[in-house]
Amino acid sequence: MFRSKMSVCIIICILFMVFSIAFAQDDYQEWLKKEKTSYQNFLDKEDQAFADFLKKEWKAFQTFQGIKSDEKPKPLTIPIARPEDKPASPPPDKIKPVPEIKIPEKPPVPKPKPKPVVNKTTNLMTVDFYGAPVSVNYKKDFQFGLTTPINNEVISKAWETIASSKYKVLLEQLQENRVQLALNDWGYLALIDLFAKKLFPGSTNEQNLFCWFIISKSGYDTKVAYMEDTIYFLVPSENTIYGNRFVSLDNKKYYFISMDTPVELSGQIYTYTGQYKDSDRLISMKLTKVPVIKNKIITKNLSFNFNGEKYTIQVQYDNDIVEFLKNYPQTELPLYFSAAVSEYANQSLLRAIKPNIQNMSELEAVNFLLRFVQTAFDYKTDDQQFGKEKYLMLEETLHYPSSDCEDRSIFFSFLVKNLLHLDVVGLDYPGHIATAVKFNSDLSGDLISYNGYNYLICDPTYINANAGMVMPQFKNIEPKVIKF
Image (cartoon, rainbow, N blue to C red):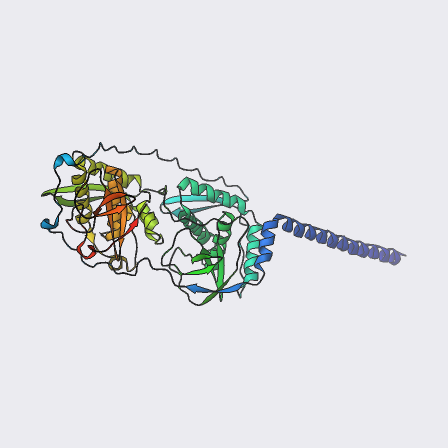
């Protein structure tokens, strides 16, 4: 009797366990089904459509060597102007005096942005952006592991992984930091690259995929491509980026982007045509604002002689801006003429020069500025100084020990525009850059006609040359006008 009751109990227990397991399996399957549904719902229609699109067949495209800005070599030595070659000076009453020079006030210093609030479910990540600490609060739910071989299926899966995460919180903070730091498009790319390196240390493939995703979600046209097991990050630009390899597709040049070292490759690479929905903006290389980063100020004395008298101009510049520009890709020359200048360089230059030219005529003041730029800096070509062509923005000309013709033309143009408020254009000769100034008086000398006005040639590289003098080897050459 006892054994019979015991057997019944055992059977009941077994049945209970079987049914419990069955119900548990049903609950698990139901939960799994809900999770899969939730995952699919979290991927919005555009992301799912784009991920599906990426799974389709990619095409092979030929890579091209980077474009060179000027094939003509620059002069290795610069001639010195002879006194007898200088244009005759007009009577003093025929030359306009320098108008009152007003130096703009310094803009208010922006308040630093507070760090994001951290909670138990998020992480705080900080990077050093050229001396400025930049922090974001993020949820670590979008990291992915790439399998090999690399192909479009693997890249599609990576898009799905990031797109199904809480990436929007991170994206919003990156964009807020961009505004706070006053970054142009290239600066924004550099900021995202820093966070990519922090998120995916040691994996260039994952870094490039992250940059591609964030830049796409920021509304810019961009692509990734692969060759063997390496993933590359590409963007088209409004402006030519010299020296960077590229592929041509969709009637645009897609430049290979790397913040560290130039991308070296040849042959064909696999990528896709088309783009993510509403991501059609091209990056601009214009620098309309100086980044608001930590200011490491350097003071420098620049000396020169003018009309038998020695002058010393004390200037300041922001070394962190120089660091920011160090790996800035070489782009179209007019952008350098119109690029923003830090308030430290702007204020120190204008305030130091103003007392010396305030009571001069326009012609004498321009000659003073010419002599300053011609002789206060050592001359070296970019190949001699950097081993490659590199246009310098004003801050860099103050920083580096030497400069060449386009650097001096950019520097001189800034001074003429901001101190004398005269119109200036650049002049593009084969292997040489100079400038021309529109005076308010009719003056003798070498000139060009532009838009119905006469501009007197002013060469900031031709040593001791006054306004109206063209370098001898370019005397009979018609230059192209660079308007900015």
